[in-house]
Length: 219
Image (cartoon, rainbow, N blue to C red):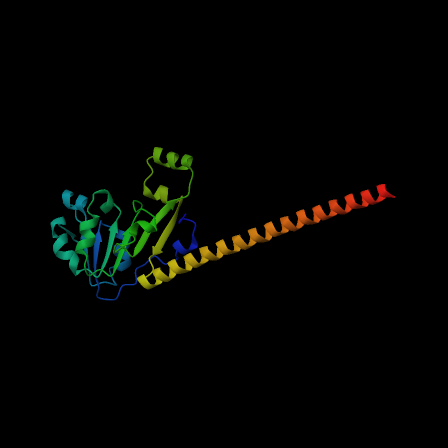
């Protein structure tokens, strides 16, 4: 139900990060590096696959065993959804004690806002596939990569309201629900009252006709 709700489809897709912030990045994400490299003091990037293969990237890839030591330095954190798949997300969030903004990013991120309630996650940045199964299977059968899938997708960015705003939002939703229920009840009462009025009119009309018939018979 959240995919088509305008409240969960925001235009902006960047974190509002103060200059000098140290950013933690779980998973090597070139677009995010390009977006933030000139805005933050440094990016601490961890990627198990790249580290395992000993590959070189545009920024240093730090050893995974350093996460517990270095993530507490980060004022912001971006992680791919792979952290859910390999069950490292709980440790990552618990170590990111100074991160005021935490974004879950990528195709593997679950877009179900209630699932993140009570967690440090502040943003969801993912996508929804909008193409047909035929288009998807055709592209994949031709060796298509993520770019082929992306052309049939819609970007989704959601920022969780602050606690006070979340409480206000919940209150407004509850109030809206109660108002809808009240209007529905009033409409039902009006409809039932109209039905009773109609039955009464029909009964009076029938009685009147019967009285007129009896009157004629007496004459």
